[in-house]
Structure formats: structure tokens, C-alpha cells
Length: 117
Image (cartoon, rainbow, N blue to C red; front, side):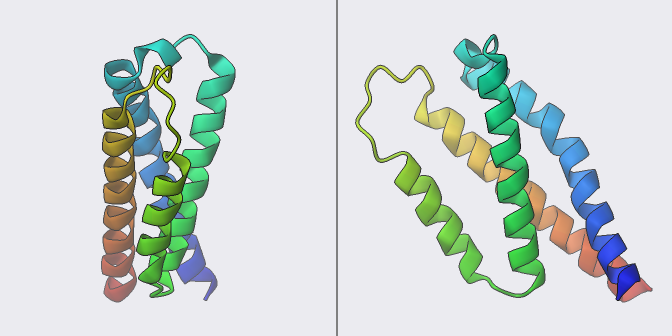
């Protein structure tokens, strides 16, 4: 049990080591106005790590419904009509898809490693 938890934590950590610089690059491309706002970057980083952790745990526990919840939360947070928002919907779409892809790869790697042991 402890070995499985350590493998899961390692897979999640490796995914985050890939995610953090990847999202910095996505932010440069799609949301350059956020580059200078350090507090905004910190909030985005914290939310990203938290959402990937929840998705990872949900998928490990075979709660596929977490994907629907993820979509609903993301949609709900973007349902405002704010035309002054400097961040495009492309930024959120690319970020969400990249986040989901990283989590799915983490889960696949975890399952592959845990079966191999």
C-alpha cells in the first residue's frame, strides 16, 4: 500500500515538473498580459496543481465522473460576460486540455509501473 502511494506521488510529481514549465510557456503565448502579475501567476499555479491532483486521484480511484465535474467547474468559472478580460478563451482551452493530458499520462504511467511491480 505504501509502495503504491509512493509510486502515485512520484507520477504526480513528475507530471508537475513537466506541467509547470509547460504552463509558463502557454501563458507566454496565450496570455502575455499575465506575465508581469506575480500574484496572478501564483494563484494560477496553485489552482493548476490542485486541479491536476484532484483529477489524478479521481481517475486512480476509478471515478471517471471527475472528468464531468472538471468540465462543469471549468465552464462555470468562465460563464461571465467580461469583455475587458485580457485572457482569451484559447488560453483556458489550451491550458485545460494540457492539464487533462498531463493527468491522463500520469495515470497511464502509474498503472503501467504498478502492474510491472
